[in-house]
Length: 87
Image 1 (cartoon, rainbow, N blue to C red):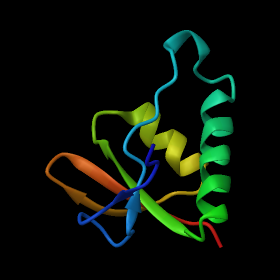
Image 2: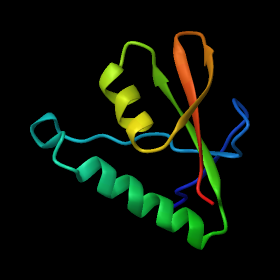
Image 3: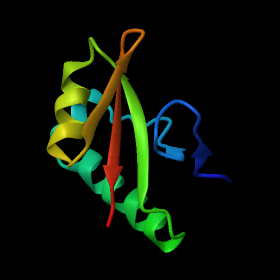
Image 4: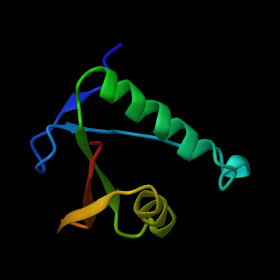
């Protein structure tokens, strides 16, 4: 299974394509736990930055990624593009 997707949309070479938590388990720390484990896996593979995109109307996800250290890189066609440096 390939966990990493090469990206052509923003400055990060790799992107997280999807992460989802059942609504009954949101705000329980599971999302941050999964993200942390994903980032550990990236570091083990010598990948130190990655990006993702979120629809502009998904405020809960936008706030989640900002709380978890992502920086907004750009806005394009109804989505915000984020990047995170792991060094």
